[in-house]
Image (tube, rainbow, N blue to C red; front, top):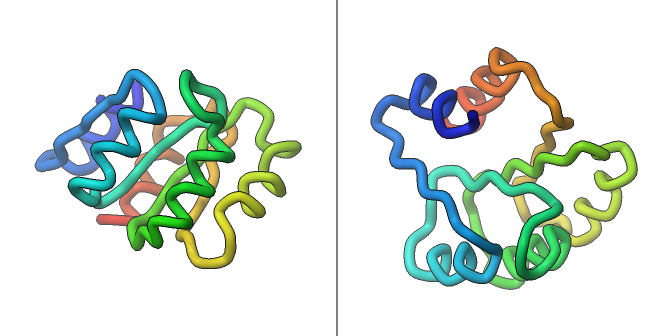
Length: 108
């Protein structure tokens, strides 16, 4: 679903999906994206640890964190990301229009 909406909002976008966070980190070390979207729960290292690694890498692109339990996860994600990462949040499920507006505001 994310891919379809992203391409509608940014027709020139190239959407890349990763099987796990380790592969994502490998790719992110080679080429910075315009936008990075992640969940907190996925194979490999946790979403919190992924944010910590991105903070260590001092990335400068916007990051959207999605979670079905964002109320509890938001504080932990903010701590993991530190003060320098540009992190915003989506509480799942999210309406497609809300997602489009959010993406446009970040990179549009």
